Length: 207
Image (cartoon, rainbow, N blue to C red):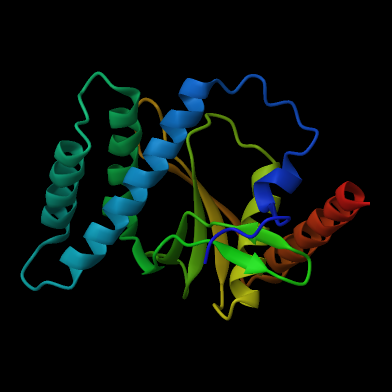
C-alpha cells in the first residue's frame, strides 16, 4: 500500500511548528542510512538465528561483516561508529523482528506512520516497538512518537507490549535503551497520555 494523499505522518504532526533548522541535510541523510542498515542487520540476525550450531557472537560477527561490506562502511565514517554502537547493543539484546518495516495507516483520522523495528528482544515480554535514534540528547517528543507507533500497530491488529527508543552513539559505545511504556501501570499511563496529547495536537493542526 502506498502512502495515501491527505494523510499526515506521525512525525509531521509531532514536529509541526517545532524548530528543526539545526538538522542539516547531511545529518538527516546519515540518520536515514543508519536506520536502513539497522533494519537490514535485524533481518539478517533473524535469519542466522534460525540456523543451528551458530553461536551468538558468530551471528553478530557475520552480520556485522556482511552489512559493513554491502554498505561500504569505512572506519572513519560516522555511520560506522553508529553501527558499532548498534551491534554492541544487539549482542546483548538479540533483536528479532516480528515484521519488516512497513507503513501503517489509521483511516479514521487519516494518520500514517512507519515504525523502525517491531519484534522481540531479551529482557522485554512479547512484541515491542523500537525507534532508532542518532541524537545524543533524549527528545521528549520521542515518547509520543513511539506511543503513536504502538497505537497504529494495535489498530492494525498487532499487539504491542512495550515501546522504546534506542540511541545509537557516535563514539561507538553500546547504544542506550530508553523504555517508554510497558505493561506496568505507570508506564501504561504514559502510553495513554501521549496518545491523547498527539490527537489534541492533530486536532489543532487540522482545524
